[in-house]
Image (tube, rainbow, N blue to C red; front, side, top):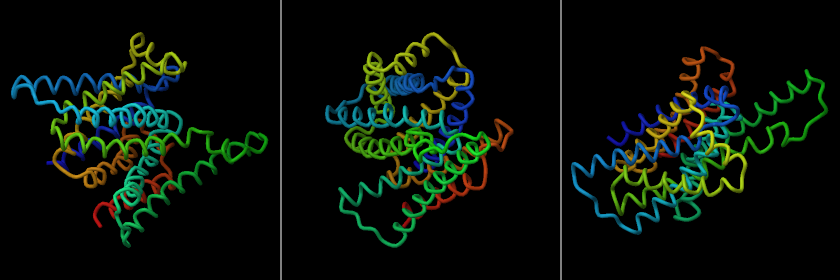
Length: 306
């Protein structure tokens, strides 16, 4: 059951990635991150209220609220905001491949804080995921160098050729997701209610987003545009991402973090197929991008199924 839910989650995330790229083209730069957070609150809350009507009100554990709230800040706020920004600047396919760093960070946390040991398959899997990221960096540098040479622009620094800080949005998002998934699992251990955990975590993430608005123009614009401009593609992206989050939470209720993370890593490959199907274009799909996606998935499989 958990494995099937994880696969559905990956399908939702892949479709959301492509919808974001379509919506940004008509949104004036807004990527719909805040909208998706509010939709997650609504979806999780709706499912939870239905459960309460059928089963009665659950016994809410205060400690679980801390875990769910922490997970919400990490995955709903930091993870999702940076993930949407990565898709906005790098495209759905490349950003999705970079997100395969999440299993790598999970291994790092296991070794550093839980005393896990690295055996042969885990080392190989980790190297494959690092190789996936390296392929994307190399391709990004090559693409920018090609543009610069044709435009006869002055030589750029390494940071400029990578797209400034934009290329780091994916790794930051992956780090936040990796830690947040651990917090989610801890919360579910104390209170096995995926819908409530999704709703509460998303609500905390939304509050943090609003709290940041007075200090950052981008956040203020995102909040304002969410309630003043309707973008069907971003609405679809937010709905799919929210469904993916709920399904991921449910999958964690039935299976381990490792198995769920491994299955959802197929998102990178699914994004390629969805991109081609929706846009009918192969512009974002080339040899290095496909290689990076395959390396990331293969590395994840070795790490999770050693």
